[in-house]
Length: 292
Image (cartoon, rainbow, N blue to C red; front, side, top):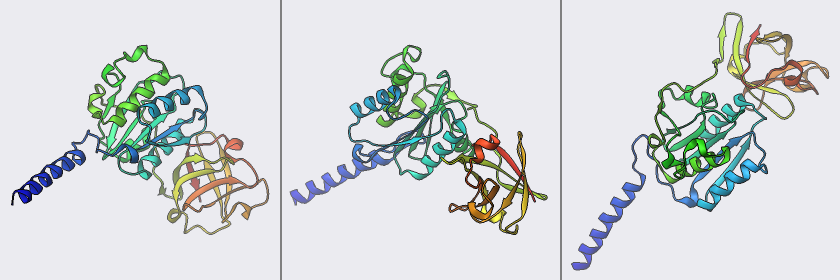
């Protein structure tokens, strides 16, 4: 009987400890063993750059078993980075820390926020736009307290040391509300939801691939009633052009404009054997209108 009571007592203690490890308030980190924790870095810096070597070195020194995924955007492309940041948040598992390091000028304030058991750290330079639009009301906090930066004053830290120490604090489980004062109006750029309006389809370019093809947020069902071969007019703030609705790049002669529903079921803009983005100076973030 004594052993049964002892076993029951140990079970109660173990249950309490497990509950304590996984329960959380809105701004507390859900406990994840270090061996299965994830860090996703979205940046325009090369993996072998001094900045990234310093940041990754400090993270590895403190958390040698963490799984790190590196996503590189185009240089200074905050719009594409914002898309990748949101995609990473949506795609990676519970307990992931997502860090955005795309900061031209390196003089932005930086913020942290939490979405469920996932956490985000990024400069307050519109890089979090897609996430904050999808999750309105998210509480954001400035990264400004020395306690989350290894005891150092933010202004005294180099760019790479600031990011490394803040990322390590997020991984450690520090509550996002403990990083600093609340950011009530985080910076965002204009967004255009894909929608049909009269004889037009409004949308936005999400990102540009390595060949200069522009992938939009216009889904297949908004295009399905338009016959293949239709010549559409595409307008943006900077350009107006004709583009043919096809089914592949080869639906038009070499050098001609074509748009089609790609394998991800979104409208893609391209030049057959050409670079659509470079030719028309359009890219991630560009607002577009297609007129039937």
